[in-house]
Image (cartoon, rainbow over all chains, first blue to last red; front, top):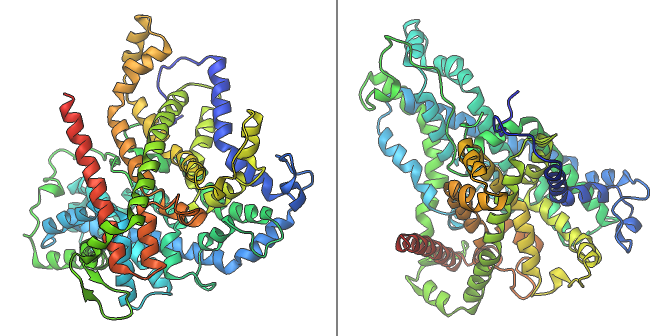
Length: 281
Length: 314
């Protein structure tokens, strides 16, 4: 059994420690627990004084009202947006990373140096110029304008996959070339399948980042046809607008967070690996 | 995205096989391969050039213009910076950024360190408890804002917890004194999953003998943590501290924009948020860029000061 964080040989901890851990975990989860509980409350329950922690009666209607407010289109937009970014980034970084590792790309040394530049410049400073570029390209208010600038943040991924592919045994690739395989085939049939763990890690983190985007999609296209979940959800933080109760806002939050929460639970291993490196397993 | 990622290792190069790809000189080789290679890199390069490289360079250039994107840009050289120095909002926002860093970074670092130590145990269902602690990292700024709006409303969870301890609670987001505090608490909470994870990974790498030796010498838990554990994860502390510093100095642009938009009275308006408002609420791209450059200089100065400070202490 592999747990990414188990220390071998550690003694079983005392019951007091166990209890403290449980308490701490629950306290950390209070915001989420309250969100779930409140999402099923009626308006009276939610506004009750003193505070109600658990609904007196369940109101699943909150969810249908939340879905109507968010709209199916928004959900689809978000899925499209996140998937497009992940797929796009993978396509760009896998291809370029592989090429830079195994092909004599002219000027690759300069390219590598250039890829490191944006790490020095913080996001706040580039937000305005990226907006200006997007505006000048006529992409404001379009899906392309929402997706492309984020999709093209390929510095990290390209370096990651270039490093990964350069560690593949060259014998593998030479054998394929002798067999007459073209580079595309080598990339798709050999290199990519070998990179599956790295791809899983990269995809998980990129998907999470894309799903949780707010500032950029909101800046480029916040009309009902293009908006993503966060853009629809954000106004509810300060006012319930036309909703029947703030509990509907809670339900909307649950809907927004559910996909990534599920992905996280299923793929926690990949997230952790991506964040702290793989020296631990 | 942290730079703490390493890639997985691959099987060893079989005996007798030619050199690994790294040792092949780029730039030489079959012309058709050069063309293919270039073609494979080209889309990436173009996209990167347009949306990353050009903006990275253009930020400073923009700050020397007066431009609202509608009319033609006007070259104003350092006028925006002059304006910046004379703008009380800038200094107030700087103060808010400093306040966030001062009250947020240290608690965030310490709490995540303690949390990681706690989670570094063999306890029943530890994977579940760890998952619960890490789960908040999937929440977007919008989700956090919506939840926080409810938690901090009159008579909400925050008020109830304080009442339970016997303290009267303020009207959080309507009070210019307490709104930043509430925002800091929320930011600390939402930053804990990531930093705890980093610390936990660092703790796992500390060799067991270190702890065993301490135990043999009779060191208690607190003493061990102070003298052994804390110094042993110094690298992680530097990383976490730096990440938290960057995170708090902007007060998370998204969260502050959604939850307070700087209100009340600019008490939650960091430099980053001010720059954003100037750019996208007022349309003053040049001035907004100047503010962003100013923030960059502040951060750079802080980093330099910290490094000088640590060098002095040796």
